[in-house]
Length: 228
Ligand SMILES: *Cc1c(COP(=O)(O)O)cnc(C)c1O
Image 1 (cartoon, rainbow, N blue to C red):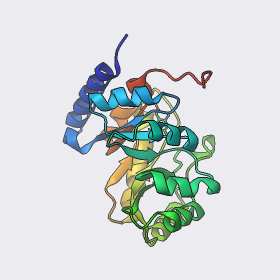
Image 2 (spheres, rainbow, N blue to C red):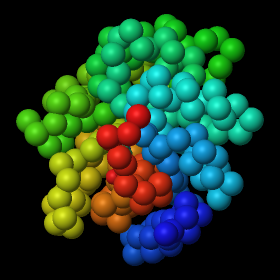
Image 3 (cartoon, protein in one colour):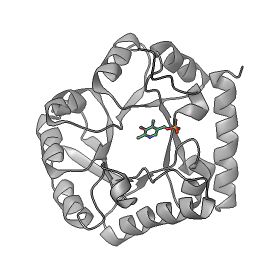
Image 4 (cartoon, helix red, strand yellow):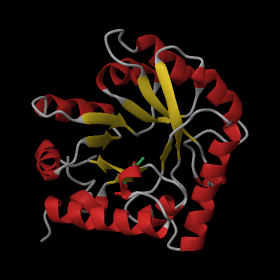
């Protein structure tokens, strides 16, 4: 059975190879370890292997894990759907939010971000798969939303996030990621982040400019949603 450290070195090799194939520096691509459903002990093991950024989808689960890992200098990223009544805790306990797709949520995060903390890093989630996904703003909504978010004082809009429809077809994967990159370029804002690519499609995402790849399964193993 492979350990988290072994998985991390395999991932580092995949990321480097994909970066080199794209003529990019491997150091321009950062790995976000997605630990949903995995215990704090797994995050601790990942930290020991070199992981510093952790992504979580469910607030209560994330807060519980944070409470068990206060001794580690981890950077926490919220990557799941956001309900209005969760924004205060997210604004207080995370450094990044990748899944903002409505102005109301962004306004609340800005208002609720504590003064003592740096502005909250934000990625705007865009839906490039049409009706097959309910999360993310539409490409049409994106420009106005991005401009409104840039104006919010306690947020720092860093870029876009997308979760394209899963497919094994490399050409289709790249087409979706290229659309995200193009949408970002058209915004013509000073953005430095593209959060795209997961375990099965990180190579295509890196070929199209990903700066964060969000990796769960390839790092921590398959998720079992049957277990608490
Ligand atoms: C679960 C999840 C991931 C990780 O997916 P894997 O396929 O396990 O690598 C990445 N991003 C988001 C938003 C997720 O919910």
